Length: 500
Ligand code: NAD
Figure: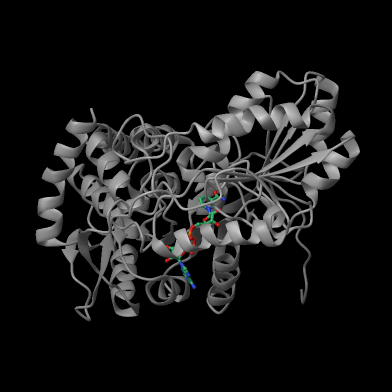
């Protein structure tokens, strides 16, 4: 499989290196109007993958105009036709899943074992929202004494979608599929560190028959292309996934044009392990939820809170597992942790090794760069203090910070003692306690006796500095659509006669 993956990669890289990655505007491939490009390089060996169009406000304006022009016809298309089209896109994603996963691994450093599934999740996202096209406009019926009041929903208009570099293909589909199902047209600004599969998505959608201008992709940096998208008058809303500080910037940038915003931001998610839990399963979940996807995962359980009565034994077993994680080439199916996406991110994660030493953290595993010239780091486990930077800041790498507690109340206090509130994980054999703790956690999502298992109809999103709004099921339509009320008089009710 490794050899097969590498051969596929070589075949995919040739056209990429020859043609580069362009924007996709109004159904056509386009270079940046300025002619500027930037490079995307592989975190495995630093080799050039492609030169990428570097968009700015002029390219965003062209894409926003294309999205605006395509909007009336897309909004008017019968929901059943839209449904079929989105299923066709899902079919095409499935057909191209190996290519998507291969390029994603090479561009981001994420391991094949996760990216091959993530590509298929992209197809699932399209299928799920395809089947909701028919109910997207549904509303309520609220009759009163003399009026028949109904609500309905209409697509808000062209929207901007701005995505990050961790699992970029899957995350893009997660935002774009519901927007299209709602009847919105889209301008997508993918992360500059992972442009390759966004280009593939635009092509796949176009080849599947998505009308020109319904999905437009503009590459470039956050401060120019991203910013211009958030400021453009024709763009009615911004669906954003990324860092909390970028969310704040987008809110400021969008204020002038009164943008509706939906934010999925950072996290420092606790996993609480009580001594009455199934400790073998808890151990598996703890390891999986921080070391899968290189720890570059918003819902990673990056803070372990373990009860003191079992802490030493649990931590010893955990450290042994962490030391045995297989770090390697992302296209090798045996690899569990790949290289980090970019040298700047590598430097950020590695800087926390120094923080750990300075704060007196006890390094139980890892704590250094990995071998070779790629952006490898050793999977790391550090026992730290609750108010330390290690316990407070989002590191976004294969780096687990462990804390201990004596009682339930202390576990809750520690868990909530961060600015973030995306997800929480509770492990306990006592169901009453598990529910009490789940209820007390300041988080948008809590899993009890489980790792993160996503069910698409359920609300996904964060509290506190982790986000605003929810995705998933009908929640996505609340964002991409306006709710309209229509009131019909059912008879000749009395109307006040002024000036009569
Ligand atoms: P980032 O905020 O640096 O960048 C995300 C996107 O925003 C990129 O496309 C970037 O170009 C763009 N951007 C940057 N500045 C901008 C600006 N001023 N205006 C408009 N756009 C701008 O985030 P990242 O480093 O790419 O991704 C990692 C972060 O994403 C982590 O904090 C992670 O927790 C978060 N994340 C959250 C979720 C979630 O669902 N909550 C999911 C995945 C990732």
